[in-house]
Each structure stands twice: as structure tokens, then as C-alpha cells.
Length: 545
Ligand code: 3UK
Image 1 (cartoon, rainbow, N blue to C red):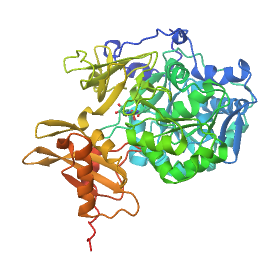
Image 2 (cartoon, protein in one colour):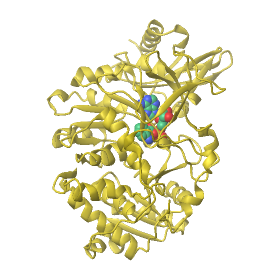
Image 3 (cartoon, rainbow, N blue to C red):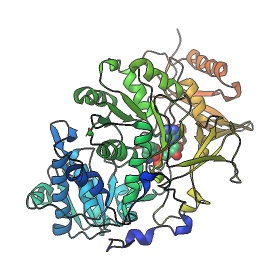
Image 4 (tube, helix red, strand yellow):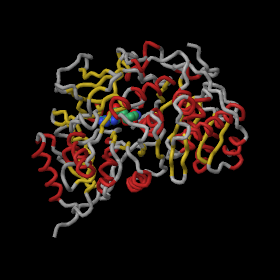
């Protein structure tokens, strides 16, 4: 397949073929031609082949763009990148903004020009941006003027980044005036289907971040596996959600999947539960993508969620506790669609739709993928036995220039780092991250299982469970709990929570230590960072009168 990349950095940084996973393209919809540009399929074809030009594509407060308007902007940006900023196919373009329509236009501009998008979390600071620029050797950047300072600072440390333009106020480097100077359609670069088009940085909890490499065909492959088989959206759907577009959960749920069916997406720059609720209400959203904690928090706001046109709600990023599934169903009448995905695999590979959801289980393997639970020797374990989850499908892990490739991919399988068990009916049940297992007095205890139990108690708003070193037991199960408003922080509450756990799951799993905290440590993508729990400052117990 002739690569269109004149800058061969990405191709040269790919792991050797024998270190990559095996790819499966069994589904008829996964037969890709040798040359393929994902922007042509998702954007140009939407207007010129499917006739969706006048349909609403993207919305944000005060903004409504049709598919034609998004295409027009993306074409102009591709011209600016190529003609004004000197981009050649294969160059990496750092993108930086809160979720908004212009960020999507920039992303498609990069795809069209044959560049490689490196979308970054808006909250990253100069030091972290410099690391990303260094690893990806980003040569260009497009971003929101409001976030320009940190990027300019990072660029002084990393001179490979030569060209920057900013939208929504960019001063001397403003993007919009440059776009206004180009009004011819852009002829998309004829990329190979296996030319890299995006680098997704892992939301890694520790260590140097890893960049995962994804091809043009991967972007289309994820649109053809989980959405048509599990989500089943229609052109009338209005997608909304909290994950940043830098997180592939957000890119798929808020850009790729709506556009693959001619639907529209609402992009919000602020997505804390109150703003997310207002967005759902004001834009009449029908499909919601967010994380388990956000579903819990939305219920706690106490608004009338049943009165909304919302019809499908997707939870991913962390295990969905059964208690949260029940809370959401009771508040809305909607059964959550859980799905496990990973940056390495681009999107969701195990999931269940609202009709076949099973509380406590993530779901079944998504068509297009295969999944197994194996022991340390790589042998499949019987149903009900916890082991390591491994998957393969059309997408898979390729770390850019990183030794850790050998740990994630073994014997052609992607090992996600999760402990799971499979039941007799083929449902996969999450147990823990393999590195989050607590070994106490010789027992293997999964923090998430204890958390799921505590969350069923009325006093608990949020909680995290982790092991702390203990002379006698090796590790002690400890819970950090954010109490619901009005619940007293007393020794009696501690005892009540401990008794509750003992009464509901095997008593040896109960938290022997409990601390009350104001909030839990989370990553930029909303995941609980269990290893940071021991550093949380405990709130003092209240005196009982
Ligand atoms: C955990 C889950 C239980 C699991 C992601 C959907 O989360 C995403 O990607 P990341 O690279 O993290 C991957 C890891 O997160 N996880 C995610 N979803 C679930 N655990 N139940 C779930 N439903 O440990 C996994 O290995 O940040 C999720 C789509 C795209 C994504 N990138």
C-alpha cells in the first residue's frame, strides 16, 4: 500500500510487525481498500455522497453547523496547514482546546491534509505538553487562543514545534483570518488505509505517557463494530457527553459515531454534572456518553430526568457499579449501556445494549472482536474463574517507540491489564485492574468489588478502596469515603459501613480502615487513581454528643 507520508516519522516509529497484535477483519463491513482517508468517508461523503449537507452536524451554545459548514471549515483549515504552515503528510499536529466545533474542524483539517492529530487534554500544563511534543515530535499546533500561553511556553522548550495558529482570538497567529483567504475545496491527501492518522496518549496513572498509533482504517473500523451492533443510533439522534476529544472515548462518542450515521453532536466546554444536565436539557440530547461517577452525580442533582428526550446512556472509562446502574434506571427509566474500551484499542470491545445488560457485568464481546480470560500461562480458564483479559480485533495496540509494547501485546493478543471472569453465558465480569488487587492475609481482594458494595449504602456518595501496608496482614483493605450531604462523620458511621460490607459480601473483604474525605483523586479522564488514595487528607471525625 503506497503510504502518502512524506514525513516517515510515524511509520518508522511503529512497533515491528511481529510485536503488533493479530488483526481480525472478518466482518463484511471491515473490508478496507488500500487507499483510504477517514475524512473522506466521514465528512466529504456525508455531504457529496449521502446528501446530509444541510443536516445539523455540530452544536454548541450559540453555534449550529451543518455537515456542509463543517466541511467548509475543515477544507479551509487543511489549506492553511498545507499552504501557509508548510505541513507535509505525516507531520504531527498538536490540537488543544476544550470540546467545541472548531476543535472538530481542526481535527478533520489534519486528516484531510494527511497529518497526524495529537489532541491534548485542555488542562495539561506546559511541562506535560512539552513531553507530548517531544514524544510525538509535533511540528505544528492548532488550538484555542484562551489556552495559548501554556502551549507557547512548551514550544520554547521543544523547537520541533515550528508553526502554531489559534482560533477564538489568536492575535498575530489567528487562524480565522488565514481560513478566510482560502475558499476552494480541498482535495484530500490519498492516504494509505494503514497510514497513522492519530496518536492517542494513554491516560496512564503512572510513568511516562505512551502514545498509541491509530490508522485511517481504525477510525472507520470502530464506527462499524460497537455502534451498529450495540448502540444502534439513528440520524435523528443528538449525542452529548463529557469526555474530552483527546480521550478516544470522547472522539468516538461525540464525533465519529454521530457523523457515521448523519446524526448531530453537542459539544460542551464545561461538563461538570450541572452543566452537563443543562446541555442535555437545552439541546434535547438523546444519547449521553459519560463515566459512572458522572451518572451518580447527575441523579444526585435531583432534576426530573424522565421529562427529557434522552433515550440511550453509555458508561465507560471505569467499572460500572451495579448500584449506579440501579440508581440511574430508577431516576430515568433508562438501562445503562456499559462498555469497556481502551486507548490502545481505540474504542469499546465488550459491551451490552440496554435490553441485554446484566448488573455487575460489562457485557459480551462486540462483533468484530474476540476476547478471552486466561491464566498466567495464557490458557483459557473455565467460566467463573478470574484471570487476565485479552482481546483482538480490527484495531489493536501499537505504542510509538515504546518497550512497553511487549507487555501489552503477547502472542498476537492485546492484554488490557484487567482481571475479569466470563460466565456460562459469555458475559464478561470486571474484577479489578490487575495492579489494583489487594493481597491481605493471603486473600486476593478486588478494590472495585468492595467499592461497589459500599456504593449501595445510602450514606455513600463516592468511594475508593485500596490496600495499605500492614505488618500483620501484608496489606489492609482501606476505604476512602465521600459521604452524602448531612451524614455525620462519626465512628458510628464507620462501623455501620463496615457491618454493611460484612453483611453483603464475604466478610474478609470488609474495609478494616475507613477514612472520610472531601473528594477522590481522579485522572483527567475521570478515572479513580487508587494508588493516590493513601495521600488523601482525611477529614476529622465529628464528636458524638
Ligand atoms: C478501564 C473499564 C471496567 C479498564 C476508553 C471507552 O477507558 C478507556 O480507555 P483508557 O485507555 O483506559 C482503559 C482501561 O479503563 N475501563 C474502561 N472502561 C471500563 N473497566 N468497565 C468499563 N466499562 O481498566 C481498561 O483497561 O483510558 C473507554 C472507549 C474508549 C476508551 N479509550
